[in-house]
Length: 264
Image (cartoon, rainbow, N blue to C red; front, top):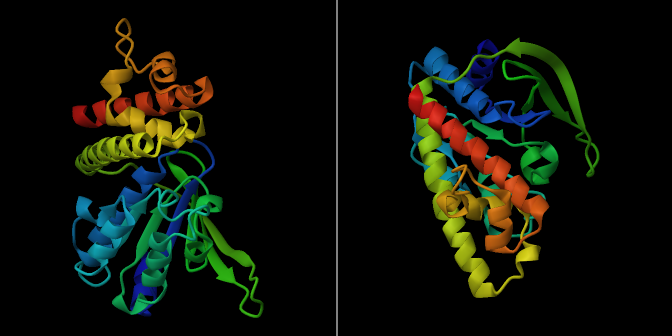
């Protein structure tokens, strides 16, 4: 936190990417925990769930109303502004807003599986990257770019390792509630779009299948085990078993996390 405080004192805006080496390393949980400590230790404020965004529009709108130096989070930005959607208007407007308004002094954190999935222009303005090595340990790298070539290289400087504990239970529960509502809404919209476009279900990505499943998990549960079943997903959506299995595993993991959060 001392480094972040010094950076803010210099009038510089931190933009931090958080990735992990394996699934379930807790990158989002760590992003929330860093946000909590950032606000408490530097600004004397509390983390608010409204400052953790799940959509680019939500992120852009919050930037206009939060107090100066309030960090904003964007969870899994690879969906709306990933490396495969750089050409969309949504992605281009988001990148323009992010790159041309550092004077607003609104830091940002992005949690995603790997920087490869992120829009290259967003990665180009990130100031540091945190790599989760385990649920409680991470390495942070300062990012520096070659300024003399158009096809710049990114260099990692001054790596440092640190331990990190979990987010407050009430903040994590607030995230799970927000995430479930978002996934439910998004899954229903996605299925309606697929139906209206008459998209062949085999063309659906595994993430699209998951979004459709988590929107209404009871529809895909086995009546005997009362758990989301890959076979039921495969039969209901007519998708390959591999995609159904991915959606089933991820949905059951999310449901388990939500139940654990509710117990705390």
